[in-house]
Length: 548
Image 1 (cartoon, rainbow, N blue to C red):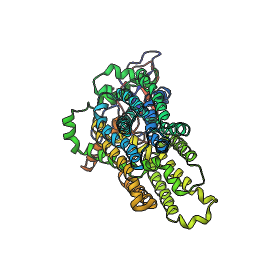
Image 2 (cartoon, rainbow, N blue to C red):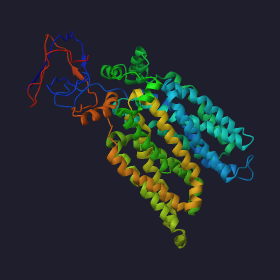
Image 3 (cartoon, helix red, strand yellow):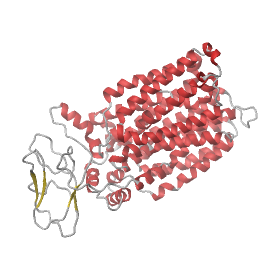
Image 4 (cartoon, one colour):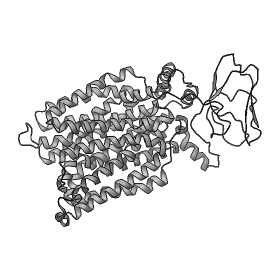
C-alpha cells in the first residue's frame, strides 16, 4: 500500500482542486525537471479521471483560420484545368506548352520566396500572418482573370506561390500550437485537408468554367479568409513568447473550454523560454537541439517534393492521355481530387492512433510501388495494345489513385505537421524559413523539369525516378525519425536535448502527456490518497512539488 501525504494544502469544503502531474519524489540521479512534468503513467497517477479539453473550439479555430488554405489550395489545382483552356484556339490568351510549364512552375518558385518570408511573417503572429496573406491572394486571382498577356499570368502565379509558401507554414504552426497534445495529430491534418479541398473545388469548377471565370471563382473563394481570423485567438505559445500572459490565458480558456484546468499546459508554456533574436537564432543553428530536428524536417519535406506529387497532379491529364486510358480525363481529374480529400480525412484518424513513423514508412513504400507499376505499364505500352477495352486500361488511373491515397494518408500530412512536432518553439520561425525554402525549391524543380525528364527519359523513366525516391525514403525514416505522437510542447522542446544528454551519461528524462490529478475535498489538514502498488516508499512530505 503506497501512501501520499499532502501537507500545507488547504482544501475548503466544496472545493475541487486540480493537481497537475505525477506526484512522486524518487531519490535518483536524474536531472531536475519542472515539477509539473509528468513521468510515465503508473497506478498512482490518477485518482479520478480528469476533465478533457473540448475538441469543438479547437476544431473551429483550425477550420476557420485555415480557410485561406482552401483558397490557396485552389491555386495549386488551377493549372490542371486551366492549362488546356489556355491552350485552346478559342482562348483570349493562347499559350504554348513551354509557357504553360512556366505558369505551373512559377507557383512553386513563388512559394520558394514565400517559404523564406514565412519566418519573419510568422514572428508577427501565426493568425496575423494568415489574415494578412489573404489580401495579396485575392489580388493575384483578379490579376489572372484580367490578364492581357502571359506576363500577367506569370506575375499572378508568382504572387499565388508566395502566399502559398507563407500560408503552408503559418497554418501548420497555428494548428499545432493551438491543439492539445491528444488532438494534435488529427487537427494537424486540417491545413493539408483544406489545401486538398481547394484543389478538388478548383478541379470540379474547372470542368465547367474556362480559365478566366475560374480565376473569378478563386476571388470569391478567398474573400471569407479576410474575415474569419478576426474572431479567433492567437496561438498561446506565441503570446507567451511575446510576454502577453493575460492574452495567452484567455486564448487557452477559449480553446480548451471554461471548465478545463489549464494550469499544467500554461506552466509548460512559461517554461519554454522566449525565442532569441534573429542573429542569435542563426548563431544557434549549430546546436544539436536545433540542428538535428532542422535537418530531419528539411529532409522529410524535400522527400515529399521529390516523390513527384506536384508534377503528377499538375500533369494528371497529360499522363492519362499518354496512357490511352478509357476513362475521361476531366472526370479522372475530379476523382483524383476527391480521393485526395477523402484520404486526408482518413489520415486525421490514423495519425493519433498509429503514430507518425508507421504511416510515413507505409506511405512511401506504397507510393514507390504504385509509381513503379505505372512506369512498367508505360514501358510495355506497345505490348498491351491488344488488351484495349479490358481492365488493363484502368491500371493507370488505379495506380495514380493508390499513389495519391498513400501520399495523403502519410507523407503529405506528416511532412506538414513535422515542423511543429520536432522543432522547439523558440526556433520555429527560422526553421520555417529554411525548411520552407528547401521544400518549395524542390517543388519548383520537380514541376518545371517534368516535361524535360519526359523528353529525356520518357514518361516511364521519369516515373521510375520518382518511385525510387519514395523507396529510398523508407529506410531513411525507419532509422532516423523519432515518434512524436502525444508529446507535449515541453516534451518537444527537450526531446533532442534529452537525447544528447543521454549520450553524455546523463539519464534521459521521460517525457509524456500531461494527465492532471483530481483530488476531492478533505476535512483534515492531511489528505491521504491510498492506492495498491507494489512500489514502496513513494511519499510526498511537502507541497513544493505540487502545481495547483
